[in-house]
Length: 283
Picture 1 (tube, rainbow, N blue to C red):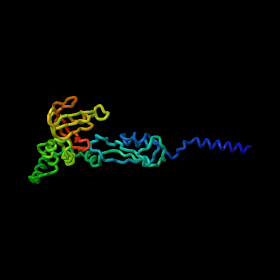
Picture 2: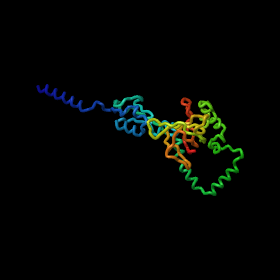
Picture 3: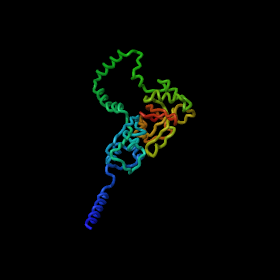
Picture 4: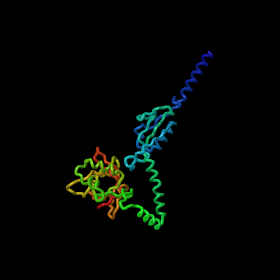
């Protein structure tokens, strides 16, 4: 009888011990699903996975940002758990599986250039007027009359100094192949021209950010030429960089502008020639 009682007690103890654990030793449970992680800051996502017990969390950079409009620096593009980018929330995995968090960022070279820009500017300001004049005189003597240096190549492009740009603004077909050729050839260069707001609509669900369609010429023109320029996902106050003596509180369709902007690129599918505003003056 005592032997039977001992066996029963032993079984009860084994059952209690088994119930005391959660059955997931050495495992970790995923936080929100993969689709929820996209668009978040990668550091927050890393912390979420570590808090859930994942021990092998890695990050990968997509050095694809140009302006930071379409995606922010550090914004998550995808997350994979054990190679699965479509994992579900609250799934249990071994806590040592590889978690890879891929995020957008600017190329390292651009970051270094940006970081040193202030230092270079400060160094230039520290030079005396005499030093600048001496340097200028020296360079003038060394350069031949037919100089085509990088400095001259970076001149702001207008219809007066660049035949390619003049041809682009003169095309009657908004999908003319020369538009894409120009955008590719002069990507990153600065252009300057007169145009107007042909259309203006909110960007996504934002209330203060817009997609602005710009056409060359003056509002009310009966003839049209040139590409469909676009400022995409811009704030009127902070991104358009309004200048001049007449700066309104807001702008809208039909506003005549003098535009200085950098060439971002041409989308053949949408027919939009995207620009990055440098300065915008009301005409």
